[in-house]
Length: 207
Image 1 (spheres, one colour):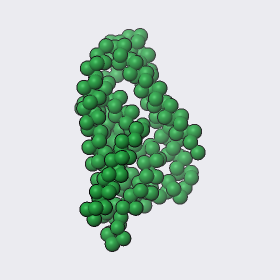
Image 2 (spheres, one colour):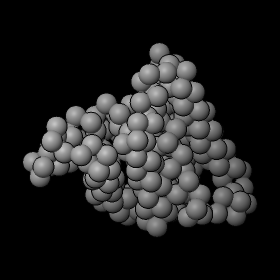
Image 3 (cartoon, rainbow, N blue to C red):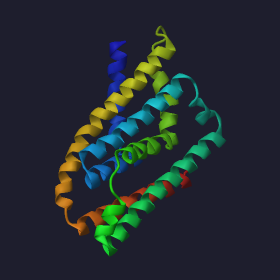
Image 4 (cartoon, rainbow, N blue to C red):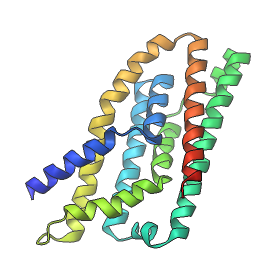
């Protein structure tokens, strides 16, 4: 069993290293608002990881592979969420260019909002569900009880994800010192917004 968990931890770590929508949201929040808000997004993302893991443990995420309709619903929802986040970032950048003080007041950071952004980005990603239902069961030994083992793997998946994102948040928050100027922050919002919209369009266009 320890060997199984070690193998799964290595695979989960490699998966965490692949950039995706969650990475963009977490880094954007860290650079724009600081370490606390970046970690709030990470905790939201890990809550989503746990939800997908528990769904796999109880057989719920199997719907994504068995039902094309369920997969498409989550895929389109995820695409809409990404495009909305990207559009909101572009809007913030535009407002910051016109009236920096007003934009800063209206876009004050919120730990709750950062947490929900991380959670929604993960939950609205059908690939996370497919990964959970297709990947986690492969690491359950035949002699082990399935449900407790899958739950333990889900917890380990979230912990590995947390270990990967924590130093990234720290580094991104340190980089925020280079973005004190409104023009630099505006460019960052524009870049992240464009990237999020591109990810949303790509997810919507995937078969």
